[in-house]
Image 1 (cartoon, rainbow, N blue to C red):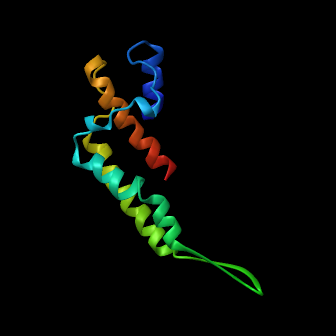
Image 2 (image 1 turned 90 degrees about the vertical axis):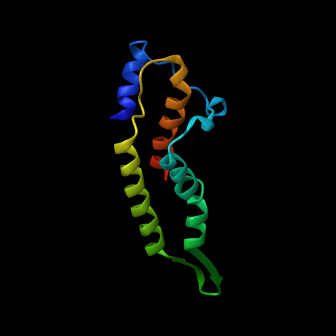
Amino acid sequence: TLFESYHSAVCRGLYPAFPPISELNFSSLREEGEWLLLFNYIIPFSDVLSQSAQITMSAKGVRMTANTEAICKFLVNLSMDFSSYYNRVHILGEPLPHLFNQMFARLHLPKDVQEV
């Protein structure tokens, strides 16, 4: 997998260890698909979940209603856009220091998509 390849390259000394997220510079992301993933899926995911679920309390107890169709559409669109991005963009690039920041920012996207 992508992360196994990255960790293997770290062990061989080709890449440095992954820095903390606070040290990443996401302005190095240049592809439209990278920003699409961030602004259409990763950032709004918690809002999509909260808007898709409704909890009501009554004398009979707690009732939860979920709009599973909206969640499924969101996830299908995410998977299609991520697949398109992943097939177009090389995340692990040449082991050149001036490319590491972009590589780390790009590596963070699949991590976030995985969490979604």
